[in-house]
Image (tube, rainbow, N blue to C red; front, side):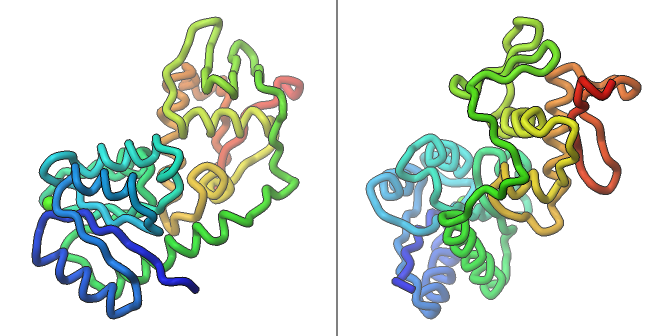
Length: 244
Ligand code: CA
């Protein structure tokens, strides 16, 4: 494997040094940035395999960098592991939703950090040559409809009874995948794998949180008459109108 380059955006010198020393010992090439603005310009101008990103940074904070990396074609797929201090209020779901791949709370074990880095790099490798298995449908039409909901896949727009809904990207993808596979149960693992791009071991709750938000937005909270049905212990399906 070619040498892999890691950018560490972290303002605490002792943590920077600890990470740099240990990563270099494990044959990674390490570049350091100690504030958010330099960090972002390095990541946009460089060629990194992974970014370790502190949450609280002078200049730009970690969430903002994460968001901007995900909005940029060049950096969209670079894995991000967020580093957060225990004392910091960190909304993990928000971090993951903005596109972080993983997060670690300081103080962390160097051994675990390296294991997570390797895992994130492996996921990039496998995602690149992964083909979508046939059992998951992907409709080629750009407009999908389900009851009074219209999903425009090109514009990333969802309307209910003609009224535009503001869904996050993950909520959009969840709804689209459920509708494309209506009547069929999609397991949490499948949804995580397809929408988040890899398995968060033990983090399938992420799916539940997003489904809950999605249900609120599409007004699907009446449990006696739900479009999105919870299949306990398994996953979710959207009811096929034809089965009703
Ligand atoms: Ca910090």
